[in-house]
Amino acid sequence: MILPRILGAMALTISLAGTAAAQNQDPKLLGEFKDWAAYTYKTSGGAVCYVVSQPKASEPKNAKRDPIFFLVTHRPGQGVRNEVSTIIGYPFKKEAIVKVTVDKTAFDLFTNGDGAWADTSAKDKEIVTAMRKGQTLSVKGTSMRGTATTDTYSLDGLSAALAAIDTACK
Image (cartoon, rainbow, N blue to C red; front, side, top):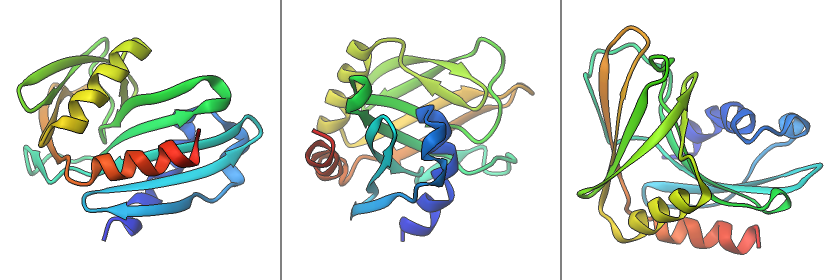
């Protein structure tokens, strides 16, 4: 179910992690957990683990976009834990802010190209804590062409997927 879609995003995930050495590494599936999947791969800087999901709904439905993903990544060799990011499927409007909402709690992410991230590890931790307790997550962004989009994700299975990467990337 999730596996074929997720493997297609692997090249994008690796580039987000900034680990060129990992480009020849295949990710190892740690497990599929309802709407989330957990993976790990090795780099010269150590293990990288991540959870990933695709939206259950996207608006507008007719917008031309590449595949869309939301990720939480651990890179213990670089001291990174619970790094939140999204790959939105289009280039963001320059200096756009992305609004991530977990249930009714909103957070801002900064953008670069087709990706968005929290600006601090403290904000990452706050978002992941809300995600663990939440039911749905939405991502609102604006493309370079001015198209406003909203992607809605289920958080069902997230806690189990995060537990898998917590164990794999201690």
